[in-house]
Length: 186
Ligand SMILES: O=P(O)(O)OC[C@H]1O[C@H](OP(=O)(O)OP(=O)(O)O)[C@H](O)[C@@H]1O
Ligand SMILES: Nc1nc2[nH]cnc2c(=O)[nH]1
Image 1 (cartoon, rainbow, N blue to C red):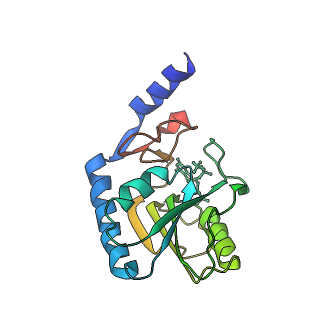
Image 2 (tube, rainbow, N blue to C red):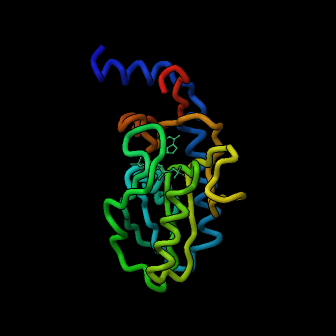
């Protein structure tokens, strides 16, 4: 089987957890919550590349107030399905001093990525740091008990998921819904 046939098989065997429309409804709700909280704070949306690139675009289309979008690049999984230490590929690309910063990521899994990114932005002098994720994975292995984001789209079960920006070994960030990899494929 070629690599591309393998990725096609992964996609076909995966279980659809949420359709595109269901993810869209969740994003619209998150946008309303962010608008209520942040519309007057001139926020900087700090996109954690690469997974958040789809979420930030879909979310921003529903935010009708002044804001800026920037990015950093940090990775803990490096195109695999289990996490390691966080590797900073590109530090924050815009001055965050005295700004309200909203870290945008695709998934809160064990939470080490967001905890470290948040700590770094505070060290750089951000006035306030909020976090927003498309999905939060349900399990008891978070970086600290009770860890959660300020804005969360959907809860997913404790399975490896892809779609809506999240990858399976670098592929399938482009599917509009959210899918769980078949256990035999991990
Ligand atoms: O909560 P954690 O267990 O720390 O995992 C969450 C992180 O894992 C993924 O990034 P990944 O390292 O796979 O890079 P990617 O964004 O390029 O997919 C995802 O985008 C989050 O940033
Ligand atoms: N694509 C993807 N990335 C992750 N990073 C941490 N958990 C996950 C997951 O379930 N799927």
